[in-house]
Image (cartoon, helix red, strand yellow):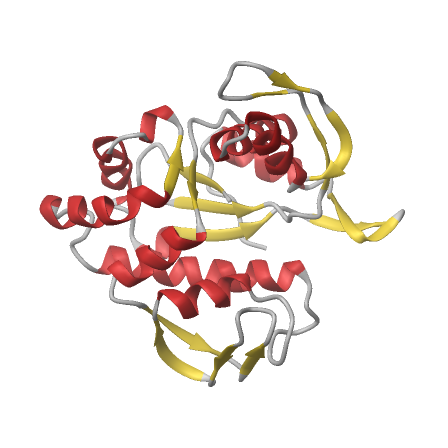
Length: 252
């Protein structure tokens, strides 16, 4: 997700780039200082794999993903936060769970045997993680990655609303306890490599109204050469320009 916090700290845009988007992955640096070769016309999610394999660490995967995002969007990205499965689970549990409205009965054997009844309920860390990962099974639509992206956006939105509705971001002792409980599962760029750095990022978000958070997916269309992949649509440039010039993009 490409996250943009507006210059006046009044709104946030969180933009998902589908994993199966065909892009040109540029030559990327690793944490060792070495560069990996460019990989033209390949799936977007391969950037993380190439970087992590070459640098033998998560940070190199995140750096290559960041470099690829900059290549395809023309947007300068200031840093990254990568959260592993255990970290996501721990974050939700540290919040006391997250309230979600599940629209359909869900049974997903491939998502750890996830089973959820429809209706409003509080998901603990394990159930939230499996819901974010689930792609196939009863109640999950056609099993496309776009459907999963929509569910992930709803889940992250619910977490953001819950955090902003409490005093977590403005109560320093509570915030530092929360960050201390989750940072062990995070890999970050150097500017967020300390609890103080993450606290500064949290402070930048503390004045954002929950309604000021927009979740978008990069405009795409089916690749005519391979229906299992997608391509960025021409109007994606409008979205990238909006973000580059700190203009709130329209949803849809």
